[in-house]
Amino acid sequence: MNTVKEIIDQNYTALCNYSQVIVKDHHATEDIVQTVFIQLWEDQKITHLEDPEPYLIRCVKYKCLDYLNRPIRKREISSDTLPELIIEENPTFSEKDILPMLLFFADKLPPKMRQVFLLSRQGGKSYKEIANELNISVKTVENQMGSALKK
Figure 1 (tube, helix red, strand yellow):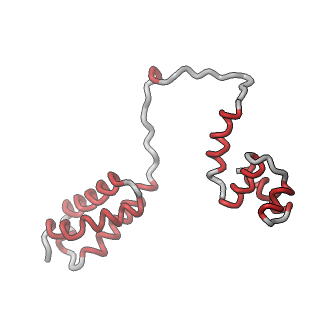
Figure 2 (cartoon, helix red, strand yellow):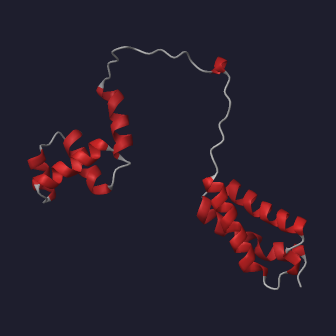
Figure 3 (cartoon, one colour):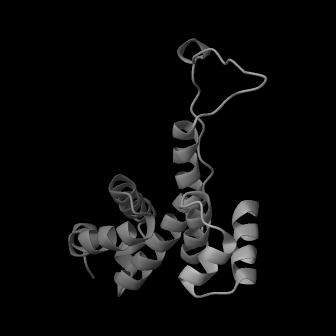
């Protein structure tokens, strides 16, 4: 049987690497692995395991899933730090205001749909021109544009 320190020394780095792949946050990764070891140490379960590695991997996996599925905690912000909200009845937007939003939302579209959408909206091409350029049917362009605009 290994001591808790030996088990931690043998598995800490590997478990952090495993957790990093799942949560993609270095600080959260270390917190998760440390929490698993603390809970197991408090319960004294870890020293009774013949082969603790599979058990540790499973514990870290579930802690990672808990971390990813937890509700985002809302921070309270003082109303003094927020700028006054001014709502215009008929706001006017220039192209420089719209282009970043257009690209932001276009980036969330699937690659082919994004390509069709940007050729139409940014490139100013007709559906027929897009269909010829991409070697697809005009109906496909219409469907892709319809889906893109819905999203």
